[in-house]
Every structure is written in C-alpha cells, then in structure tokens.
Length: 107
Image (cartoon, rainbow, N blue to C red; front, top):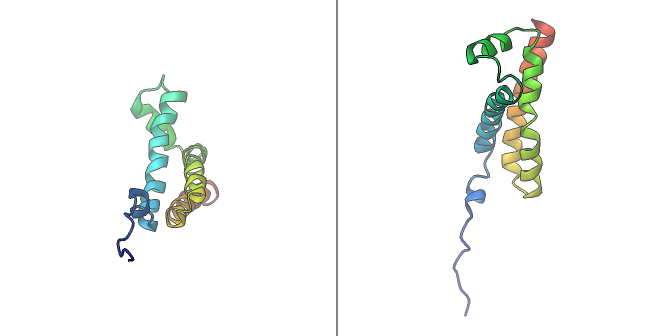
C-alpha cells in the first residue's frame, strides 16, 4: 500500500524565491553599514558619519565594504541549492555595484 502523503516543506524551501533573496540582498548591506560604523568609526557621532558617507569621493568605498556581506550568503545559499535566493541576492548586489560605478565615474 502506497502512501500519498507529501513531505513537509522546510522554512528555507518556502523562502527560496527571488523576491526574498532580493530583499535580503538589499537589507544586508544596510546592516553592514551600521556594523562598519560601530567597528571603524565609533568615535564619530551618527550624523557626522552619515554626512561623511554623502561625500561622493568616499561613497563608492562604503558601498564596496557594505555589499561584500552579500558574498558569503550568496555562496551559502548556492551550496544549499537555493538558487532563487542566490538570484535575488545577485540582482540586489548588482544594483549596488551599478550605483557605486555611477557615483564613482559619472558624478
């Protein structure tokens, strides 16, 4: 006798969509922005830190540092074969990188 029951879907399988990957890829660099301030620029008040980031000559460097956090998550989800999440993280990272090159070379 065969059982027609389906195996339960894990929470990670439910999150394996490009949209969730994109959201994760956009939010992680913002979190890294705060962590980077706490590690390297803790002596600056928050408003002065944000004002220094707005300087167009420094902004590409901040973007590079903050987007770097997407890389380990991309590889982790790739190893777990969650390719839709990987695609979302990749697209979000690509948008950040395009913004970085736009600021660096066009403005």
